[in-house]
Image (cartoon, rainbow, N blue to C red; front, side, top):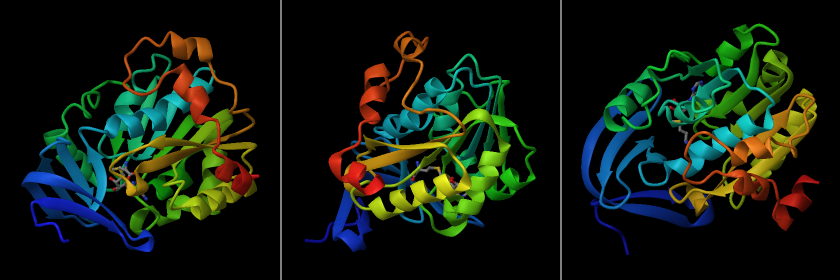
Length: 283
Ligand code: SAM
């Protein structure tokens, strides 16, 4: 039975699956140089942004993704100061990064300025830290930014991108990962959104191969729930430059000087435990 146009549906043809949200109204739609951005008001998930008709961010569940893309890596590093976010135009990851007092500079490099400008208007709470003096917003291709960056520049690189098609395709290549390793300081950490463990296990396995071949010494994938993304189950993959990712600042995570909704030290530890099928595939 087809749903009427008061629902937004993202269909995943490869898996014969779809996920829908009931809409109240369309707030905005535009085609930018890079992609089509649409903003809806939903009945139960608050404001929703889609890019090219794929779920990006909703008020109701973005905390899962943004907290898992930031806090595990930040609490794994001893003292992260310089952080680079590639993509992340909704600014939710940036806000989480800036909750860490050790961070002195967080640069966000988003290819499409319109994603950020529309987020400022429709997701003001995600953009609450955009005027923090430690935040820098740049609007260029993250692949070029990394190529042009000096060696040993960052403690942490977060790739908060769209799926590996279109402008984000080059963010999932070994060449890009080699460039990231070069610009990370010794002990630095790279983390990338890595799609669904249920639907995209081959992508996760090939990402592990690319990161290892690029020279990262440790690679770990953390699954977490994300209701609006395909399968409702998502992942982030961390890679260390000479750093053991199983160890993190547990006491600091327990005493974190800010509130979270999902992340805590126990969730962090649990996220490092791989389900059996992932453990076997990534062995
Ligand atoms: N949470 C989302 C997800 O996993 O589906 C990602 C949200 S964030 C809005 C993704 C951003 O990555 C988009 O705004 C897109 O413009 C940006 N992006 C894609 N490719 C990029 C590139 N090569 N350099 C910088 N930003 C890029």
